[in-house]
Length: 632
Ligand code: BES
Ligand code: ZN
Image (cartoon, rainbow, N blue to C red; front, side):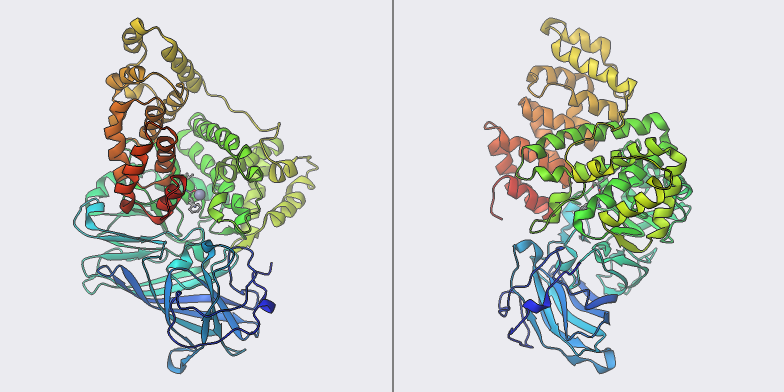
């Protein structure tokens, strides 16, 4: 697909001066599809070398991005930038660099994409070097004061690139269809350590200088960096964990099964391609549960539940080492190929770790979420978001991050598996990963491969078109059942219907202790309490099990949602503490939305967000601000 029509680039004015985004030069409108301005069909980066200083005082990265490019004979190289200050651009290698004129194009379509950086080059140029610095508008970057870390002693920095934020910390051709290798030289404060989605140090060095090498080609949304007071612990079988020193023991316990997960994954879909698989436990502001940066999954500390009950997120990020990182969605419209395959694969890994029943329960919790999401989408401005294959042109790719891609995608594969049999399914997926490794795939390419390698081969009739190009959940979707879930659903019903005077007694008889049920069963119990359950009933539950103080973030989240909808205000001090500390969007965005929706709690939403937004990454902050109709 053409990502940019150069024919539109006529007659623009050229300067070679230092240029910030605000004193840009006028250019003609560039047509953009695929969320990138880059002309990767004419010239594309094959290797990136970053040479950067990390300045915690100014909260800035500054240095050079050296692009080694494959040039088909064009005299313009177009990069994506957003929130960057470009100081100078040169072409050629180190010894023979010469200054190259550049212009900054218009903000296009909407502000989400940033703007094109257009560099004049010779038709045989293969190195373009961009001297730049980041700004306060560099949304990928989260600069944390020491008070927001675990030790509260040293500051921390991390990046979040997916989907289109890499352009806010590196001037780059920011399209998932292009793959690059990269190296980096970084200078950081001497008491901190730097790690990247690349080969990593195991210890600090007293110069504060680190070198990184990523030899396998990756899409650039997977370039990642973190700088903090870090130590490393080995878990065996090429896995380990980076975290702040006081979290090491807890982390090694929580993720002890990681070597087993690696075995399970390799047994399913072939050898792990990235040599090493480590986790990095970030501060609480990290906006996701996990992010699959190659060799170094970024993980949220809310996963440290103390009982290994939330490790399926790690199975998920590990699975991305195949689905997503090895075989990548070619555009953000094909995002379900990353996430749907990964949720399917995650569940297969969990089946090996905790058995079929536990894995089914995990999938059922997700299925419940999908049904709620589909109800929301059906009445939204974009009911077509219920398709697996999306059309996000002109929209933020973030709009595609819904349970449709994740859970409908996974149930499509689960249903296909039941239709063809597990054996054939496993061979098919193995071949799929092998055939498309280190490339990107569109939905259409996948469909052709599915037709050829599975359906026609075995003469199987399967309604994949309905699954991929239509809304809703097709009739033939597999249905899972869980005895444990049925029990807690009945319990939720009988608790909410029990007569007032017998309530205490009912609880004594039916609810013994937290360990009576698994995390997923408690979640199901809470979800089946009526939204408007009387606050005093929640109080009775709280008195027996201390839900408000339960330090499992998934359970806290579900509990606080109920507490908001039924105005059980005694939970609010705990809710406030949660919102102050945790920045994971999946939790805090719906909590703010729920508070905002109710007239009686709307002020809480506004006041708390005003107070705590400084603790959040831009990804979470922007989503919440939009829901609270705040102009940030
Ligand atoms: N790659 C995603 C996170 C992501 C998606 C970031 C799109 C930016 C844009 C990651 O693998 C993910 O899905 N994380 C989930 C966990 C998972 C178990 C559903 C999360 O953070 O909750
Ligand atoms: Zn994922």
